[in-house]
Length: 251
Image (cartoon, rainbow, N blue to C red; front, side, top):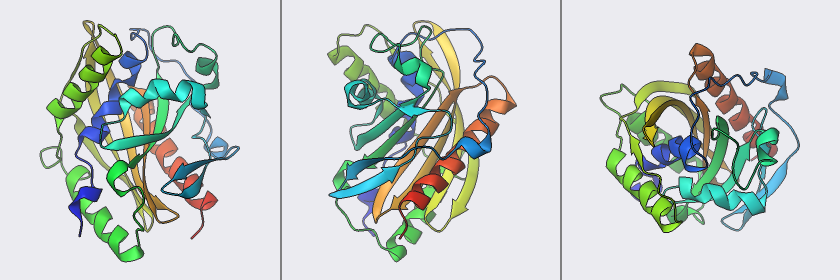
């Protein structure tokens, strides 16, 4: 099996910093109302991935930023990945390009691996890929592979190139294990502290590794940690969004 299809853990880390990289973080508690499960499937848009059009419904409670503002999120994708789409609450889109006051509290990113974007991924290969990814990220905290320094250095370099004086430091994530597993996808969760400008925010991440139209996708969902409900929202939204993408792109 080609091992280069699996990104290093840096792909998980980059998006954690979105709350600070788009705008400076706030210490106020995130009071966003949790979306109901039935709201997960909304209007669809299509995005090109490896010469194929992938239909992507937005995650529950979020909207795609559009091409004009999507570029603001490219800094959050590692160099090995290409950002396909970015999603935020509708109210936050109206506040770009300066960014919402206090930074982003909730958002989602859809990415693909640059080196294998045009590879045809069959059933056998994807099953093997899922197994390897599960071993890398979905086991115990001590077993998970986290490339903290690479992710931190990549992001800070991008911020510097874009003229930002912000500097981000990342703590080692705490793995929450496997959120869900199905033939065409597997999802994981993690908690992580992100520091920027002397302010530390704890973020919750959900990452889905999935196959749509024989293309590999990574679907990331993030929210600031405010309690157990934050983890529950990420877990539910990650699985609902993954299901919606798979349903919109039947085999």
